[in-house]
Length: 496
Image (tube, rainbow, N blue to C red; front, side, top):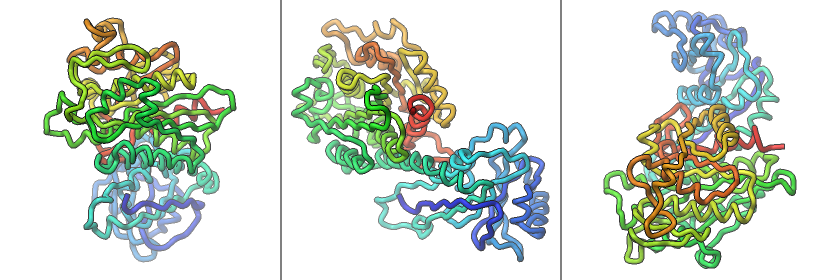
């Protein structure tokens, strides 16, 4: 990550010199007392004249930039529009922080977080800082020639009514930002760098935060019987790994929440090889696992008072002479047999063994898996919302609410007996694909066969996990999607 950002919190009355001075207005263009004081009479008059001449109406997510006049201790004035009273009532502070950081760029700025009718809390200001941190992210570590602005770091001073409370609240927001950035870095890494063994090493770095990490190698997976995961990996020269992360922040005997991620670091499709066009994107087929790792980082960094287990299956899916084939029958850790129809339906085989192992070993109170599992979910929901499948209405409702609150939305999809019947096999207990129709749903039905009575949810993040729609808080190919949702889920439902 080049550049970066520094964020400080100071009272509204604080003075400063140079850089940008950022103020906020609604559609009536009225300035707060604090903003007027920071601008001075000359600055306030200039804003009014410039708004009229530029036809700036203060609409939500609009901005007006102009040189600061003499007498104003700033180089540039930036006026951010907040829209109507209705717009301000449903303000997304994280998005506002990202939008503002985008207008400031890699500059120094004082940001007056105040406007007529302002009702922001310390938590809101912390969310603003989170959005600014996420917007500042870029991934260019492999570019040997960089522009000066790529190396520059923004320095934002947030002027707010209660700077001390905001700074305290922002510590948790910074931890979440670190988790999202870690997930983005993992997704953006090339597969010749982030192969399974290297990925496992990076997961092991979480031990410095107090996370317990266990890495299963091929011998251990063979011993316990992870035949489905090992089948996927057998065509690659890179050996697979399973990484299990435990954050014990809750009561000693409290069953954990389990988060499970698909970690296919490169997916060629195997023998059922993908077309060449777009195959380079398959370095991001481990987006679900990145979300799990990033979430454990965030929880540990902010010392979450909850017991959470993260587990990821890390493999490459490659087509060498030892690769598994269509018509092969493999035996999963559960003992159930799987007829391979398509070797490009590999993620569900990886998840099946990890789900079963975590369920049997750790007795979690609930399990949530995340996976860039199917192109079918992109056809159904596009690239702005993830698909949610679940066997439990309460867990589904909690995830949906957390997604709404965090700005990472999900939509619940059906799981009906017909989808389960579609994966019945003539030769084994099941087959690994139910055909073209309802592909996301039959994939979820496959995973459901590896879940017993524990509340479980499956998030198909193929549309949102990589190459998703650009937003005010993300200009990166790798989105780090899921970290904010899962952190909010734990905060609202599982922390004591």
